[in-house]
Amino acid sequence: MSQPLIDALLAGRWRDPDDGKPVSVPIKSIVIAPSLAGTEAELVGQLGLGRELAVVSDPTTHALLGARIERALGAVATVTPIRLPENPHPDAATVDRICAATKRADALIAVGSGSINDLCKYAAHSDGKPYAVFGTAPSMNGYSSANAAITVDGMKKSLPARVPQGVFLELDVLTKAPVRMIRSGLGDSLCRATAEADWLLAHLLRGGSFRRAPFALLAEEETALFQTADALVAGDREAMGRLARTLVLSGLGMVIAGGSYPASQGEHLIAHYVEMTGTDLPPSFHGEQIGVTTLIMARLQHRMLAGGPPRLHPTPVDGADLRRHFGAALGKICEKESRAKALDAAAAERLTQKLAAEWPAIAGRIGAALRPTHELEMALALAGAPRRGSELGWSPGFERTAILRARQIRNRYGFLDLADEAGLLGPFAAGLRTR
Image 1 (cartoon, rainbow, N blue to C red):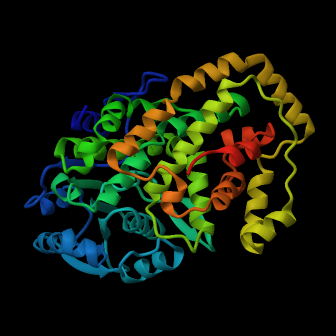
Image 2 (cartoon, rainbow, N blue to C red; image 1 turned 180 degrees about the horizontal axis):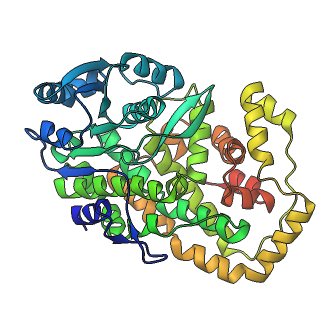
Image 3 (cartoon, one colour; image 1 turned 180 degrees about the vertical axis):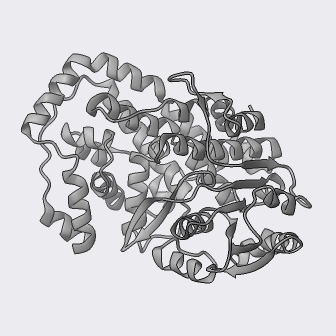
């Protein structure tokens, strides 16, 4: 599968597996090609973004691609270069800086990967302007999504953001990205199965929404992507194209779902906890963390499904404990999020009875969505990517705490919650051999 699937989706010709109706997404152009040199002005011009364009980069992405984009667009528009510091942090203060610097611009052009893309799409959303992105690394699946990971008051949040009008990925640039960023993109792609299992559990057990479409988009290339992960980090253009398409389609799946549900569940909650609280840890990429936390969630999900229907218990929320652990401000937020999904005695009994009556069907359907944990681990091993928390500097104690606490930071139900309600999360975290 290649660009034709993406083109069909953009044209509204791809059909939803749930109801057979055509699916469309609000993006005008997605181009993934060996080289885009010489076509930059044409690609952006076709989007109709206006005559004044702000091109946002940092020192690394400016040298890699930004200067070329500025020169090309300067021939057809008034270009305002916005140079962020190296490794800009995707937080509210940086968004405000971008908005202030781009007041006169008709649109924003992001040149970069995760942080720059998130900052630009959220700044564009805040100011009601369109934006497009030229990617510089295959490090995450957010290029085509409608949400941005922004830190607000110390809490990492997935916030509604502007969908790009254009996504442009040059394989010759992506294959030259730092190998850790390539591994990061693979790690971010690894969680399809665990995210689908968590979202499906919430749907089957607690009645939330669920869409098959985001996962159907990824089905044909996932196995080949994982099996050729070694070629990916060796600079193979075909393998890189497969990863680039997977990342773009994953982002489009979030647009179709109306949220990050198909690509951000328990594995992302653990990673978000690490990013929020592990301030003294060695730097690591988001996708590297997701690779590790996906293996954790896969082990938990397989273990839960292999057992019988669990008996659930009430899950009281201790606000004082949350404030002690997370601090007053974040603890208050976590308390609100936790209370929204907590079980009282009646709810615990009702769900226990539902599990007892429907467990074979529930376990069977979720199990069909999973991949064997050893396949996920092998993909990371082929790419030389981290597979254990210790490889990212996590101590055993910190890793156990992350597993136990991650569910408290967001009202998103999944296997972390089910395991906690069954009294199994603590023993799982204590006995997990991830080092």
